[in-house]
Image 1 (cartoon, one colour):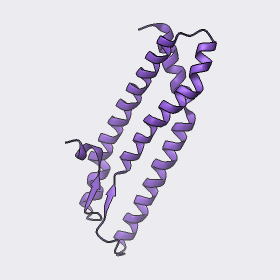
Image 2 (image 1 turned 45 degrees about the horizontal axis):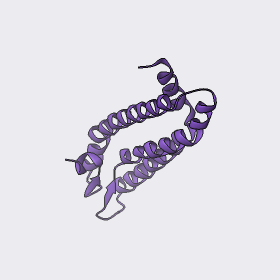
Image 3 (image 1 turned 135 degrees about the vertical axis):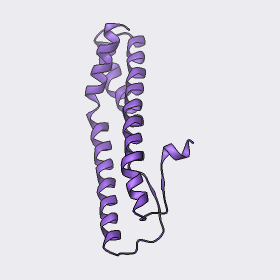
Image 4 (image 1 turned 90 degrees about the vertical axis):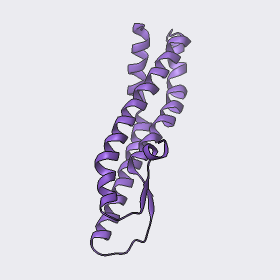
Length: 135
């Protein structure tokens, strides 16, 4: 791997603060909604037989947002500073691989720790999760 490619990877991961923020807001908002529903269910409010989407599924929002923001913000900046297109595209590919692997790990942990707790509580009839869909 070229030193400039790793420099672009690090720069790309640092400069996508807006996708990090949007994903964090959506993730924590859905987590709060989930906790409110769990509290209502525990106090006896009938929320009906529902199938809900897993909280970890919303983390996958980061990948397309990162793809849009990395290309729109950093490409012209890198090229004007003397970077090569090959290095930029290889760095972007490595960014997506790193982000996808981190998100996969977090979603797997959420699936085995948090989603199993929610399903065992009896609050929902099911959770839509990418791990179950891809099996």
